[in-house]
Image (cartoon, rainbow, N blue to C red; front, side, top):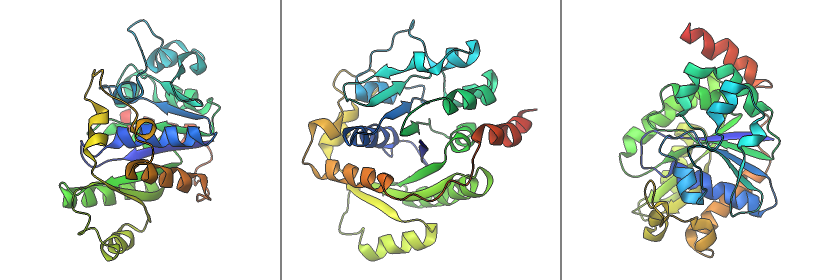
Length: 266
């Protein structure tokens, strides 16, 4: 089982869209994938079309009432792909119980678990990177310098303090493909000390797939736009994650949360 998250430096970079579609690509390849919704705007629910009501059991209640996390698992229209709605923003678990949150996640049985995080990161970065073994950085052309600066900070935080391994970066929503040359990407790889997993060119059809919060027009781009360059790029990311990843640096993320994160709140 591999725990992963996508780290972002600003909103609007396609974090949840990439998470949902990579999850679907891995599920299509026969892997059981669980997506944990940590964003209060519920982007994964929107993209995947999962019906979650106010009465539905969510992760926050699982943690509060010490229930079986499998009871909060929702099926999606993609075989092998599941969603756990949170009920609160990820940083809200600091007020509930971050250690119990980690314990509940550790009890999951799956090939991949993706933890989606809200922006701005703040405490959510500590919790998501703390419970995950690996993370992927997303860069965009918009506010590029901010993206790179924040990526460097996130890599330092994740790699050295929270023992979460950065496996690579995705250059998403590219508007000027001619400027994102191989040499330019190589310079970024040298700077960040991680490889570029995929370069994804901006596609208006894919952008519309998010549809905005509570939109009935949202759809899973990987499913409906098969054969597109976007789908091919998502397949590249899935193939990368199915390859030989670095050995995880932490063996027990529950203990890490207890040791590093909880003392900061006391």
